Length: 230
Image 1 (spheres, one colour):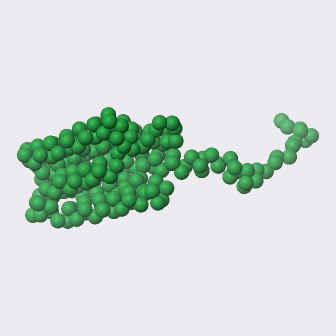
Image 2 (cartoon, rainbow, N blue to C red):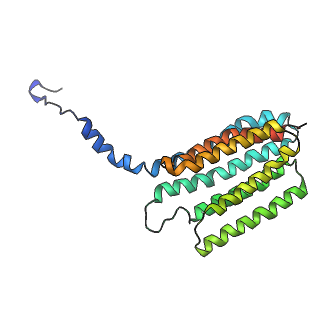
Image 3 (tube, helix red, strand yellow):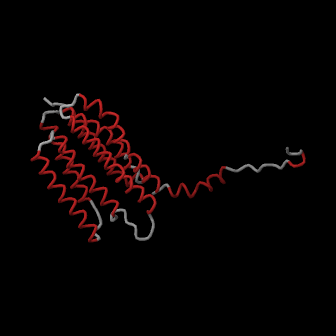
């Protein structure tokens, strides 16, 4: 038990001292936290899909497609998270280039593999359509690996390839006459792309917002498989 004479005055910490203590975290957040945000928002589409899958598949026009969409999202999730977390940790270190790293190549490769699987799901298992998507996406994957091996930095050309692949694997929804779900897919994708475009202007936070818009995108994508269209 403390005695009366042992009591010492406690010096109050000023708000300026608190800010000075937080300064390294604030500085780090300019690159670190947006990448962490991007990593963990990648979980959201898969979590939403996990919540929907069982009910949708039970009455779906193509139940196998519902599960393939979910498994594809789960497959891509850790690959994308690894890319963003590696950027968070390695950004600013000597030799690290966010546009030229095996993690980025792996992320984009996983996306193209998902495009094949998603095309199979959205086309209700059409073999010829899936084969065409397979050829296209394997060419894109080969180009990614070649660029990485050659030391060529990534750029908008890779984004354009993904956009074409996304358009092609979602096209069967429109061709079935399922206009409502296709509209939801298209609007969600456009909004996601808008966040991605403004990301450099908002400190890199736009990519995580892009991932958040993939929740409604994936919602309509799964309903597109479940629906019989018109």
